[in-house]
Image 1 (cartoon, one colour):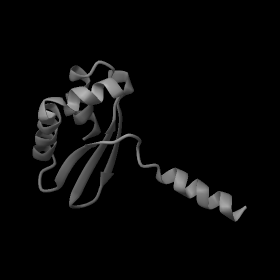
Image 2 (cartoon, helix red, strand yellow):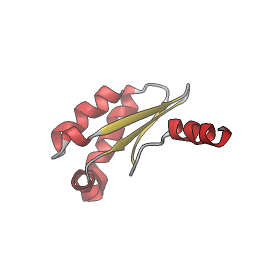
Image 3 (spheres, one colour):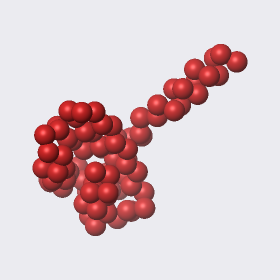
Image 4 (spheres, one colour):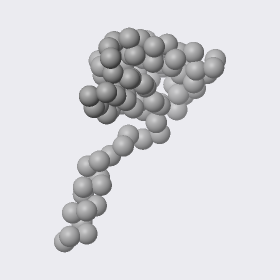
Length: 91
């Protein structure tokens, strides 16, 4: 699904190289977290988030029976950093 979201977003943003995507999946849910350039965030959220809603609709159709959504986030969830922090405490 990452490729689909990237395919949908790259043509409408000014800085496609800045798109970072992370998927959080389970059997019933698919969450796609997207970080974009600050200027592009306005494009996706502007006009009552029409562009973002369109991407969500297409992703939802492609996800089949799973509930799917796209979320614009400031930074990706970094589970690895949490593991590193635990490792630092043990040393």
